[in-house]
Each structure stands twice: as C-alpha cells, then as structure tokens.
Length: 79
Length: 391
Figure 1: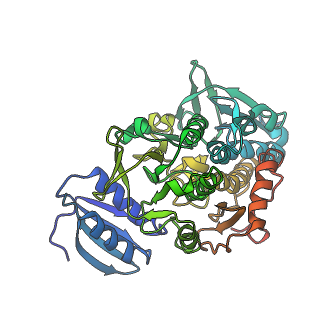
Figure 2: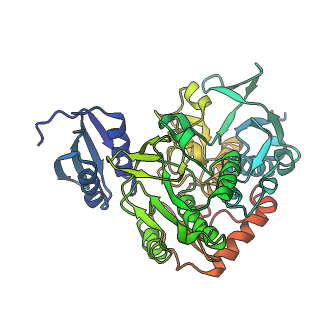
C-alpha cells in the first residue's frame, strides 16, 4: 500500500495498448511538478511500455502493484 | 390513426452521418423524417489529403456536394449547429433557428487545434486539411534536400497509419525527384515503436529500415521553435529540422463543448457496444466524435453507422435494439513502392497484417475510386456475416 497521496487517478482498465500509456502522457502533460498520478491498466503491454516511457521522460515510477486482473502504476512528475 | 413520423437529426455529413441517414431512410421510409445538418454541405474524402500533399492527386476529386450523396427523402440543412439540448430535444443553429428531434445522431468529427502547441502553426506543415496538404505540396516542390522530421503533436489523431504512410510515400517521392541522397527522413513516434499497434509495427519497421527512414521513439511533441528550426519533446529531447510535418492535435467540436456533452477533450462518452451517448437513450455517436479507444477513421464510422441506424430503427418501431458494435476497423497502409498492407481488427482481435504486397495497394486505389458510389449509400457490406444480429 502506498503512503504517497494520489493527486489524480486514471482508470484505463479495458483500454487496449497504447491507451493507458497515452492517458498517462496526457496527465503528465497537464500536471505540475510533484504531482502523483495513479494509472490502472489491464493491458499486459503497459508493464513494459509505462516503465520504459518513464525512464526516457525522466519521471519517477513510485510503485507497481498487481491487483486482481489489473496493474496499478503510481507515478510522480519530477520535472 | 397514423403515428407522426419520428424526427431524426444527424449532425455531420461525413462518412458516418451520411451513411446513417441513408440507412435510416431506407429502413424507416415514411415513418421517419430525417435531417442532416452540415456546416459546409460538402462531403470531403479525407484519406485523399495524403495524395494531394505528395502531388499525386488534386483537390477536385476529394469533395462532392453532400446533397448528391443523400437519398431524396433526407433533408439537408447547410448550417453550423451551435448547441444540443438533450432534455428538450433541440439543436440550436447558427442563424438562430432550432430543430426539434426525437432521436439525435452526433457524427460531428474532430477539429484540429493548432494553437495548443507553441510554434506549431508557424513552424510546421500538415496534411490533415486540404489547405494544409496543398501548402505542403508547394513546400515539397521547393525542397532541395535536408532533414525532414515527421511527427505527431497530440493523441488521439485521425487515421493512425497516415504518418507512417506519409514517410514511405515521401521517401519514394524524394527518390523520383533525385534528391533522396541529400535528404534525411525521420519519423518522430510518440510510442516506443513506429505505430500504435504492436503487430503492425513489427511488419512496418523492417521496411522503414530498408528504406533508410529513421525512427525516434517516445517523442511526444511539446513545442516548435521556427526561428531555431527545432522541435522539442515532452521527454526532453530536441531535434533540428529543415522541413517539419506534424499531425496537429485534435479535439472534439466546439458545439460538443458548448453543450456540455463531452469530456475534457471534447470527445463524447460513448458506450462501446450500443454507441449510446452517456445516459441519453435517444442520442448516439459515431466516428471521430466518440471517446472510444479505437482508431479515429472513416472506416470506424463506416462500421458504426449501421449499428446506430439499426438501433434507432428498433426504437422507432418499438422493438428492443439488438445490433451492437464489435469494434471493427479496417485500414489500408501504404508502404511505398506500389505496395500496401491492411489492418483489420476489432475489440477482441488485434490485427495480423499481411506482408505488404501489390494486391492491397491495388485494393486501396480501387477503394479510393469507388468510395463515392459505394460507402455513403451502404453498398459495401458493413459487417461480416457472423456479426450480423449478434446481441
């Protein structure tokens, strides 16, 4: 369980790849430095796409949690 | 006693709106009074913009009078719709009039929002409007070599294969002009591959490599500096260009914003199967206007229109609607050199595109030619037999 306060939650469950990543990119675009964003995705591709994008874009992957039938990504905008 | 005909208003005379209106007219006859409202009254075949930009077609064959594509008993109102009142069943028109409806079809498409990316209008070209494609054609004629970057300034955007098709066709164009060796082509992709769909990327990327077309991944355009000739990404990268071609950001139409029906980007919250808008049982949406997680393309609207027409017909007849949209989309993808591949998929089945070949290229050209006589009138089967009548 995360102790970080979630500022925005994106429920991308049921969205095919690359929907969850693109929704996250949109949220990062609109957000402020320090914002914590949660993405819920049931798409397998997100497990590689989301961490790869965060590494490239220089934002922090705070947490990845396997839930029942989906994965929860907690992300912090750092620049 | 004869019941009053149902009043059905369709906003938008593109692929989806035109086909839905014609199918409703065919199905309901005198039981419905169908009105299409379109701001220009001209039906534009948008897949043709790509060919205009590369000098392979002029603008004339891309537009026809919408009146000539509609069945005789469908009324056409050439006026900008300004607002929708879902509770009163009204559409407000630009010149102050109103239309009353019992059922409403929102086929309003997407608009291009150039001003949401700094420097975009001044620093880049596009082929997502006829005027933009014509300007790009002139710019390409003047081009004598240099660095061409092709990218995407916002997702979602119409016709996801178009930027990939453009780089392939551009490569061929530069070769024919004898300036390929003095030119560098790079596709700036927002994802970690060339195309949104992974299976399609696997087919496309080796072809790009073979043609010497560069690929920069995870490049989500943030701003353009026309004076410096650079484009910057959200990911913190910057690249120089001599000619920049960007897909402009898209959003839903102003009237959707003004009516409070859309989400933050102006897309209509649409049920993925029934195509009903939100909780409004008599409003349906299709095509680029929806928030569905599938391609924004004419093909999508083409496959959705029969579902909307069938569901409204059932409601008018007082029977339970049974037809659902399964997410079907079919797109051609030109890979240059007289070859193309095809992407066919739905909600449950990702595409497995064949290796690019001449047959699909010929099929795309045939479709471009036959469009006017087939698609708006519903003469091409919209659904595979197994999908018909599926609950």
